[in-house]
Length: 639
Image (tube, rainbow, N blue to C red; front, top):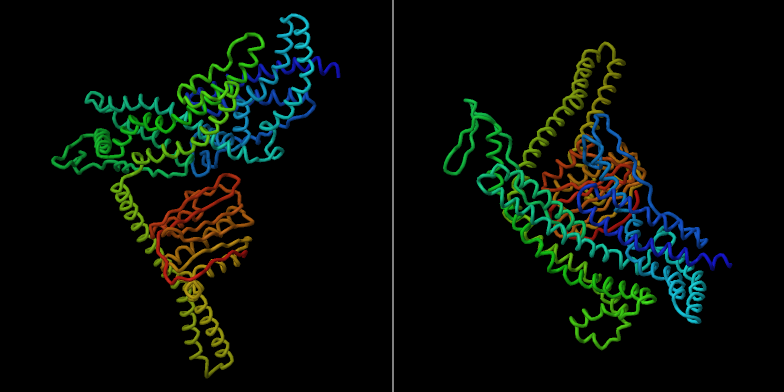
């Protein structure tokens, strides 16, 4: 007991100093993580040393162990048989990018990462000030005259064990595994809003840095540097596209890519020259490289999205500062200027007498009505201001996304042009698929039913010769001919079923999908919500697409269960097929997904795939169409 009382102030002093180190570390991680070198996964992983050290120290000194909550790191990528490294649906020639993406997903999807940063930010106030209080009282008492100094020293030693019990409670709140502490309502409300504040601050920094890229973009327009223009434009596109992806991930507001396709590689004329046709003149080039550079410059100039990217880079700092100013100011001034400073100021006042409510004056100058609130209540006002800033942060981020979307989204003309290009491509694919299907039907008829009919005709010819001489042999041949006719009829039925399944024509898509689920070797759950029927060709395409996806799940993914979800919303038929297989599906591997893509592309449909290594796999088909014959067909069953 005596040892605990004597050592507790020293333990608290060590934890208080570490809390200040954590605050410095948090700033370093934020700056280094946005610098680009090294990759942001390095400082985030490095920063885990401090929470781990505090877990061990608090567990050892308080007698309450704090388990480590981190998920195990991902395995290093292994090359495929062809030497390429795979990450979901992307292939890389070296393992570094695939390893970075795996580590980034591992860190970002681990709840302990955000909880570590939250603890590092809050610990200087919630844990650091109480931890330093016993040592501060003892140090202050050593400088004060008797008997007041003795009382301060005694209070410091007496408070030490209570402070360590506080540390034993506070440290696991954020640093223990989430399964132990649970996901409280406060954490569920706070975590996404803290992330919104961090993203706003990060966006402000990158927007200011983007002005340098915009200046380089403008400089490349000068005739002297005109050859750099396409390269600078491509760099700008990567930066802007990253922001599109971030806005979609942060706010759910999808910003499609607006760029025109890059020109096709040049083909030489009969005389070996290359021609670039322009509205008023045709220019001849003697080498393919010269024509390629001219094509790229023309492509850059004519693409409206390139100019809109430049405008966005120039105005982006203003776009983000306007909505972000209020929440960042409230959180920064409320948490740091009032709550954080006020807590530490009280500790410092043990040694230096001064007015610790100085931070209050800035806010009262801004809002005079707050001058009637007593100064000692500034931590409470800081807490309210912080909560208000956190509440406004998601709205500010969404407002920034909406405004940015006006410049970064494709125009109606660009959408129409891309749609025409896509329809042209899918039309050619549909023609090829139709020709291949006709050849398959012709081959099946030739090798199947026709062969049976030929054999049946030959047997009947022999029967005609044997019917008088050997009636018994003729009878056997008639039986064989009859069996050939049965086989030919069966193959014709199978062929017709492959063209248009009878169950689909008779009972509609919902019952046809349920029949597929019952015939599948997987345990399939079916959910269908269709207020009517789509056109027959679309139903056929969906039927065979689902059939192919279930076959892939059973044959290639080694899945056990699958889920089929079909619904019609806002003029789009949405079909999702998910399985618990091993994942790693890729349309380029010949697993049938490419065929599904071509099948639904005929109807201007799209296929979205998510299939990480280890599973699960989710395939979403979206086909724009209208339904007819309204009726209720809502069900959920297991096949």
